[in-house]
Amino acid sequence: MPQPVHFEPASVSRRVIVTGASSGIGRSAAERFAREGWSVALVARREGLLRELAAALPGHGHLVCPGAYEAPETAEHLSGLIRERWGGVDVLVNNAGVFMTAPAIGSPLVEWRRPLDIMLDGAVSMSRLAADLMPGPGRIIHVTSIHGDRVEARASAYAMAKAAINHYCRGLALELAPRGILVNAIAPGFVDTPMSVVDGVNELEGEWFRKNYVEGHHLPLRRAAQPEEIAGVAFFLAGPDATYITGQVLTVDGGLTITF
Image (cartoon, rainbow, N blue to C red; front, side):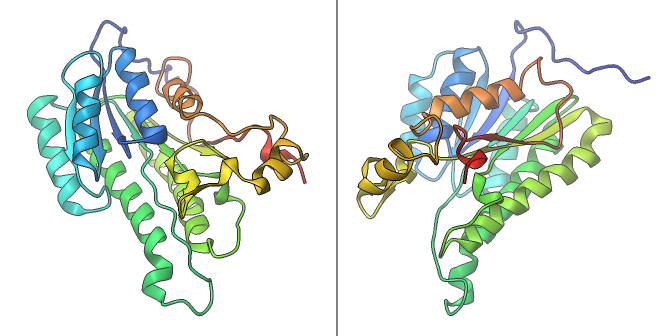
């Protein structure tokens, strides 16, 4: 009977890719892994913020790969960088995402499709890259959203992208299990990140959020998550206590989706 596959002791250097690392959940994930002794490959569009973060992280061997994570040239650059500097990778935390709205009917198709194309293409590109660079047991972790099961007006393509990535995780988990690569997704609810700011207004500070979620009954914990709380779940899924979890979507939403 196959035995559980464990990572090597913590004294051995571990290597993780974090996409969307310039802010929010991605930045918190990079900081958490670095504090735990991991080398981190930082991927995001904003090179200046990545270099500032890399300089501030503890440890050594961190890599900076600026670019759009769905672009083939970004994957090619990252692959070459990792092969040259690390030789391989142990974990992918694919956190990058975009929130764009467009009506489900009547909007130009190319405009409506943008979040779907960006996030699904990015998830596939980064997963293929990471799996190709994993010499043995590894972990692939996608940060999706409760939108994978729920929708709001004008965000159908965003929700479809998150649902597609959740199901892609299940397919990957099945196909990569023989190699000892575990694949899971994290589905956050409200998180206090720069993505909470729309048109210069932080939705988490508005009357709508206060009435519905702080004073109302829709969110049992009555607050948004902090980015480090989601990063902590990613670190758990990358670690030795998650050796029998694969193909799952872990909802981390303060109880939001258990109410009506």
